[in-house]
Image (cartoon, rainbow, N blue to C red; front, side, top):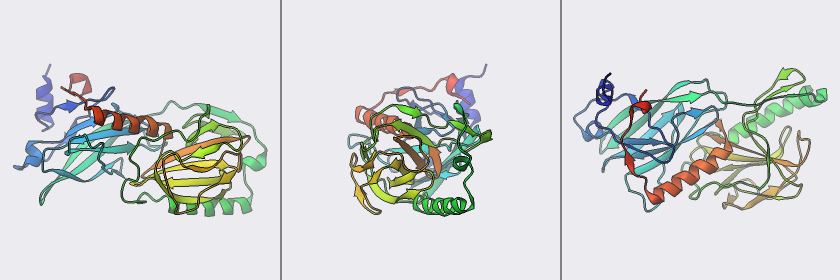
Length: 331
């Protein structure tokens, strides 16, 4: 059997050490450009918060670079990747990013590309990361026909609303990261409908559930899950009174079925600020909050935002210990 070193050499990726957070995996690059500069002689150390991501999942990435080298740009599954710093106690050459897979991305190895700079020189690095199929529940429901098949007038309204929301949540959004602390739950309560649930209504397959439903009494305060800016407010056909927050770098969270909206478009919001009151407006059978998130256009599980950002900020403060990659991590 070939040694790990032989396998690494075959991929032109030499002498790499992986820094591991709890439950992390590092995926080796599929190729690496050769050069006489330190960009190739000292490649980045990549740390991922999980071995692979699932449909609709978020993976935290830590990027540790040699001194004098900075990230310029990146992409994962053809979506932009933005970099940010962790805590003040963290090494100045360490950066972080959130990698998102859309709810309906096809399970496959997807390309992660990083472009780094050393002064005027720039080099690109390429990695493969697996997107696995999600284990989603299937609901079969029988509803009044008008709730499943909107009429022509309602369809025109729905199309207009989708265009408005798409414009308000374009991946560019605020260029810089607007949040500093971990994301929090917008309200306490039991999750009654999980992320990604497939729904078959009156025998017809419909769009998967792109958020989580949290049971909460009518009128309960709904809080901003993190610092940001109000990108959209309005009454939508399906989600009723809705607030969408822009957290910067292509990250948005939505708060739906509200009974009252308590912010207006363009308002800056602090983490924990009340953005509205729980209700059951729109297509809803009872009081609850539908909470969802988008990352550079990918519909992602908002619960991942809470766990991943908490892990990033907690571990950057503590400083994880380096560990050699092992054969089980090789692809």
